[in-house]
Image (tube, rainbow over all chains, first blue to last red; front, side, top):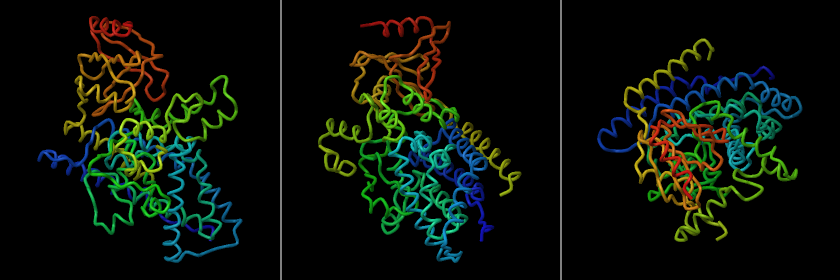
Length: 316
Length: 129
């Protein structure tokens, strides 16, 4: 079954991506003419996001063989083969979403992985073009390792990659402010625009929350779920926003930051390693803030927020 | 999808969306006021309150003197803003523009349209104790 293949759903979805972006834009323009609000677009921001998306596809074409080769290597090792039935694909989709949750969580908690993922959060807008602001350097995070259990359990690499593509396609439509809330049953199980707006928020309350891809249940199970509050609109972007629309700088700025930090004079090897693998915001001299420090400083300024959502177990 | 279809579709899509946004007037830069500048700074660095603010005449950049005594820059990024300390910035003056160079790959330099009189005011705020 080594020759098994499934369609690359992310590329087949490109016409739908373009169509939905135009639809969202038309909706926003119409809404704003009625003095309402349903999101924002800005030309250079959107252009950067779209170029990042195209670059991500090119990076996939150029580097995809590394992940595929690794997964096929594991496939030859495993004695298990679950086959290709619809139920196997459905089970793989759910388990792959659990895989996505952890990769995404690592992406926010390990600077080496954050260096790849940061560009997705570098827009200060939250619209459907933001969904396409994807990494060019994901291969170098080596997070394909997290797919290993699925292959070793007997899911064929082609099925695992197909489910990963479906996962990404699902996540496209949740990058919008045009949809406020969906029915309660849907919000309780699925990742939605509301849940994912929280994930993109740079507000201290919303940092390191809602890592889900398709099913929000993982965040609820692992204690990272924070609901969107009507009283606190997400402020999109990075804690310290970047000052460039240049896609090359967007793609590589955190890698350059790691290199500069690691090559500083006078550091111990432990400190150099921590600059690579500690949570973003780590510094050997305490000159920067991690998300925990940002939350604590916020609570020092706003003690009334203590023990409210997003600030539980903050140590104050 | 074959590359000969995907490639042109992506290029036409990107160019088309960019042109549409420009046509809709969604390419106009944000214009700073004093209150915007203060809010934009505190949004990123809430622990260091602005004491003095000088806004460039094109209202896309502002120089700030902060409570810590450091200098800061608020720069318009399309419809949004970003903030940076200018602690180690290099200042390069030209006839109609000031270029600030930072040791920051994500915010490497800012060329700010400033008349000579404005540049003198910025330098004066920089050198003030």
